[in-house]
Image 1: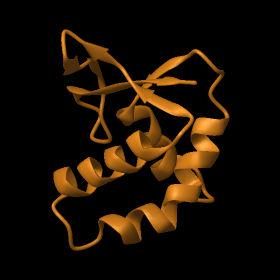
Image 2 (image 1 turned 180 degrees about the vertical axis):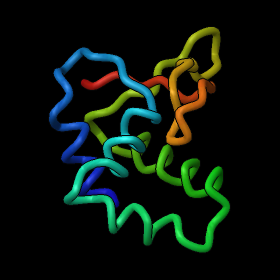
Image 3 (image 1 turned 30 degrees about the vertical axis):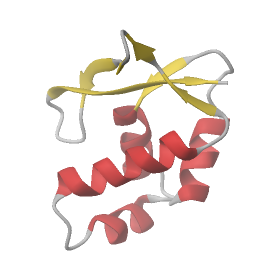
Length: 93
């Protein structure tokens, strides 16, 4: 999954803010990563699977977690189920 996530992040312009929903949606909809995404999430609680994907995003050296008032900043966007919800906000370095 890390390679797929690195490829997605690599397409984001430097200095651009993005959220974990964007990455998860790309993993699901991109033909090159859909099967790996489904296998990664199989047998897991979807929230736990997505939380662990966020940890992968956060661990990349080209990504910075946005911090506001000593807390991780949140974005409000559509999740994989097409429902609005909060998620972590990142910046591409």
